[in-house]
Length: 478
Image (cartoon, rainbow, N blue to C red; front, side, top):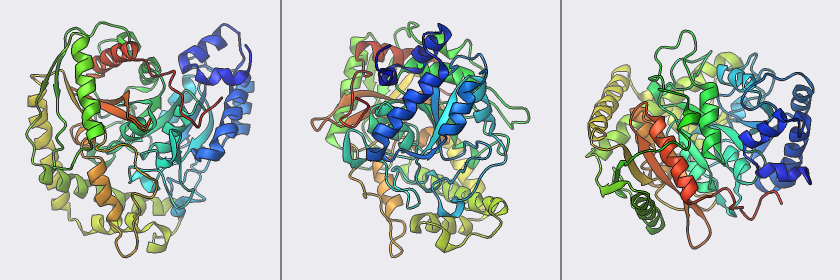
């Protein structure tokens, strides 16, 4: 096989195939991944909790026969509960918290044969679109160590981009899969609302804003992993429309001639950097070259109303989060437990009334219907993933004097992605463009509700036309 570190640049399906053929043993894959983490992580700070002994023990046992048997994997340190392993959510308040059971998603990862070797960095409670928590420190972008990775799945995206593992868990409440995928040059798909389970502790998070999945190097890994995890858990309050066939079968399937709308105008009027405009125009041109129709069009939305409704649910959701966690921690939360911006958001949420919350839910449901009507004419909507290239570290800092500074900056950086959390639509960031500074800029494709199939078909076509897997950032496994 040569140097085992060469395995790092195979995707998860290829690694699993080696295990099935008995060309390599699971423990060899695990040891190779650990070696890769130890080589690169000191420069990036992507992995913040090691689970090496747990992984070695799992690899030594009979693993479930699944699509990813023996493949090393990383969990984001938010929502993905692994029994007995600390889960901090990037917060001092949870620095010593250890779940007493696995989340349903983690159970499904295990049944798929994945071996978890560690947990990845996240901003406090996944709030900001950067990964720089006070508790565990900054995660650096492998394309430029002075730049942010995006967030909140920045640790996972940096780990995949740098070759530590072929894919890693991620979740998305306002763009947290797609934003770091864009900033780190990997593939990131947010599934349809309720495609993946949130149980056993949650049936719904933030009135449907939050979705679970992963960041991956290849499109086929994302599709196969979603096949392994998708579907309702017993007792879920609602579920996504079932797919017509496995998502893995969509990879390589002919998408037909798609009607694609594209826009570079942010709903709330945030300025969009020329590089991000260029990325969209380039993606639209590529789609036309592949035989699709692309025309400039966008749903008409009141951006200010959308932001206000989203922030009501987001702030109330964070207030609820810490209040509910107080039972697990065993003490009430206080200002000293949190970063300034987090505490300000919690206080904002506590000021919102129940009618305020329900009005915000209604507002987002109205927007969802308008966008669904717009999508009757188009198969896909193309926008920038983010409004700027990866920003310098420290761009989202807040202080006690101005605790909302980070959130205001976040609104300018990420005006496009939260819409899909509000509507529940599937959306993906595809790494098709690098700017003159060598920084990745993702293209954001939005599908109809329940229609990941079209996105996977298009993504695979784009991946074939303009492959990205061989692009290696300066900080990566060598």
